[in-house]
Length: 189
Image (tube, rainbow, N blue to C red):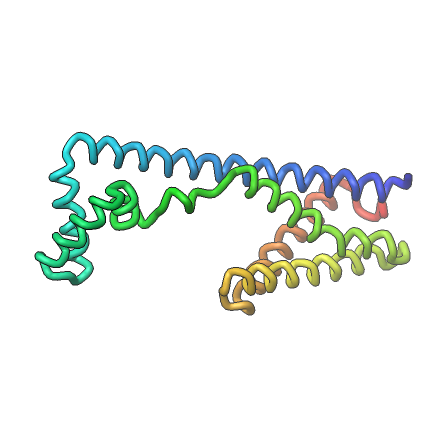
């Protein structure tokens, strides 16, 4: 196995693991905060259900319902599922919307590997005298594809999202190259 292939495989595996672990930690932290809010709301509903009903009523009045309609809505939602009503109205969340850290980690690792495929293939296939420029170009194309795909899936403006990913990735690529240059690791490919 050549040094380039070994370095490429190590970079892809290391990057995928790093991204997965970062995503796992991030989503776990957010999930812990969401569960803490849910538990707080449960305690409040048990401790003072009337105050919670008043709070829910006030939230619906703020949204434009008349006081009597807001009170009726608050009563009916509380009778159906008080916790769900309060989580939705107060915190704009639902228990079913809480992300899985494992799913997020897996998606992040897969996305990293898929995103690394085009630059890795370009690096291996390019003639040695063009390897750096071809890899940079393939990386920028891969970043553009990633940004456009994510925007399309999320319903965001494609040009803005793609530009953000390309510029951010380009800056990271430039920083990596600069650090390599400062450490004397240029022209080793």
